Image (cartoon, rainbow, N blue to C red; front, side, top):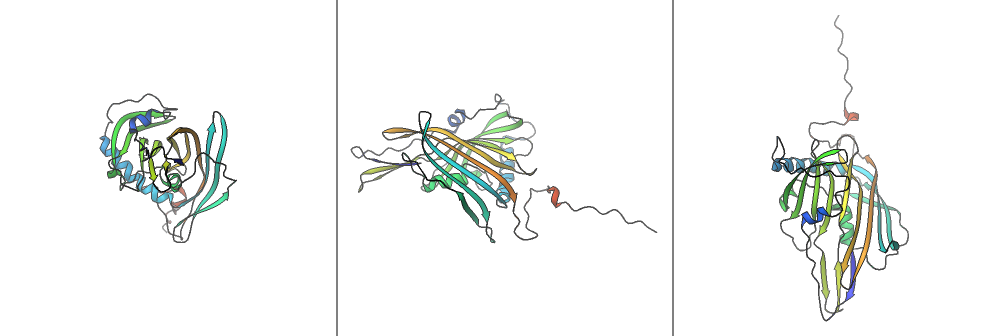
Amino acid sequence: MKRTLTLWAGICLLAVLTSASLLAQSNCEEGNSPINSAQPQGFTSQEIIQKTSAKETIFRQARNNYIYTQDVTVQTLEGNTVDGEFRQVWEITYDEKGGRIENVTFAPQNTLTRIGMTREDFSDIRNRLPFVLTTDDLPIYDVLYVGRQHVDEIDTYVFDMAPKHIEKGKRYFQGRIWVDDHDLQIVKTCGKSVPDVSQANSKKKNVTENLSPKFVTYREQIDGLYWFPTYTRADDVLHFVGSDVHIREIIKYTNYKRFVFGATHKIILKGEVPPDDKKEEKPPEKKQ
């Protein structure tokens, strides 16, 4: 979220990153049982996160074979009153080469006045709020095993994550993930996109701040194989220079449907075949 303010005597505020463990303790424990910090049985925590990242790599490929609806709402609040709102509904489809297409089907007038949506916000909506931890991503992060926890009706392994290094112009997830102990896929994430950035413009004598709220994303098993993000919520106060802004963000992902590029193009988890892909077995022929 962006806000531009006049500089006070040339002051430029740089955001300080909050640790992943502290982020995880803030409003992310709804529906969770107490954490059992005992080490996992049968696998080491390192083996679990490696297996999870391998599954997540295949899931990211598979998700690019699904069309779906993404409903985005961003609001600012004064007390309990909404005083500005950005709303867009996208139909996510693909072209013949597999390129992502975002068709906006609903977009009322944007009434946000105290903040502005940035390209980083839209990138977060596409890539970091529905966070996927692939094998390629894993070396970028420090990953700490926290323990086991019952989340709603699911038994999970819990890990805290933070980027090892932050490169200029790149953004990362920082927070906590919950991994289903059977499917070894992420079922819940809670954290924020980092880094927050403040940039001074000496010619215009202002500072542009790009801050992100803490969020929680839930996944559901859609087709018996994959855990898809279905709901993201953020309810946070962004601390801009000179004032605070209470922001609420809700993203809903619905109507997942598999989209096949050609008659034979399918992506499945190794060793598993969706029911509609199983060939009907023919009965053995009777011998005369």
